[in-house]
Length: 346
Image 1 (tube, rainbow, N blue to C red):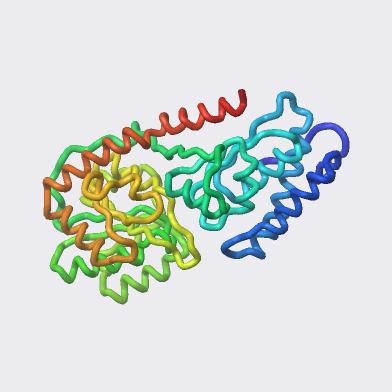
Image 2: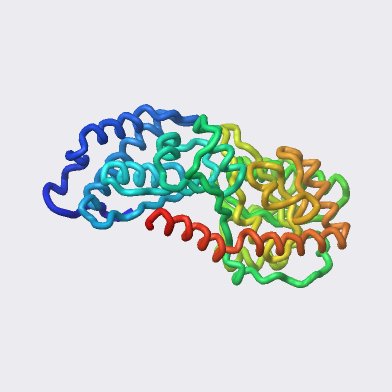
C-alpha cells in the first residue's frame, strides 16, 4: 500500500481529530462488526485497518477535488478505503469477489458510491449477508481475461491417455480432493487418463495422501505452481480441463474462477460444478459440462463423455469461446467498470 503520510500539521496523528464523532462511530462499527469465521482475528485486523484508513484520510483530507477510492475484495483494502472516505469526506467503491466472510459488510454496502459484484450469485449473496432485499448502488460487472493471450486452438483427437488438467490453488474450495477421487473412478472404468494439477497451497499434504491411498501415483501429478507461460502450454496440450469446485467446511467458495475462463478461451472442453457463479459462466451442455459439487462419480462420468464424444467436445468448446468473448473480455469488463466510476466521479 505504501507509506500513507503527508500533509500539514502533526503527521504522526493516526486519527482524524476534526471529526471526533464520525471517527468514534467508525471505530465502533469496526469493533462490533459481525463475522462468519475467525471473528476475534478479523476484529483485531480491523483495528489495524482502521488506523491505516485514518492515516489515508489524513493524507487526502486537503485534496481538491477529493479522490475517489476503489478497493478489490470486501476485506482489508475495502475497510481502509471505507474508513478513509468516511473521515475525509471522499467517495469510495468496492468490488466483491464472493466473500464468504466479508469485513464490515453492511456499512460498506450502505455507504459505497458503487458496490460491484462479479456475478448474479455474488449479488444475491451480498444482499442476503447484509440482510437487504435490494441496493440501488449494487452493480454486476463480470470479470474478464485478455483474450489476445489465449488463442483458440484447432480441433484435434484426444491423447492416449487423455490429458486432464486442473489449475488452481491447493485449497479445499477448489475441490482437488474430489477430482483425485474422480481419477480413481476413471481408472476403475478402464478409462486411460492422466491428471495434472497445477497449483500450490495448504491442501498439498492431504492431496498427496489421497493419491497414495488410491494408488494413483502413475495417474495424478501434483506439479506445484507454474508461471503463466507454462500454464498456457499445458492448456494447449490438455484434452479436458476440470475444476471440481465445492463449498469448504468454513463456508468459503469460489466466485467464477479465472482459470475456467482461460481454458474456455483456448478451446479446452471444461467440466466443473454447480457452485457459486460457475453456472453463469458454463451452461451445462452448451459451454461445458456441470456436475453437482462433491460428486466424484459425476465428475468422472463427464470427463469420460468429453473424451469419448468428439462432437460433444467440439460443440461445447466452441460455445465456450463464444461465451468468453461475449461476456468475459477484459477490455469490455474494464470499460464497464470505468463507466460506472466516471459517473460517480462526475
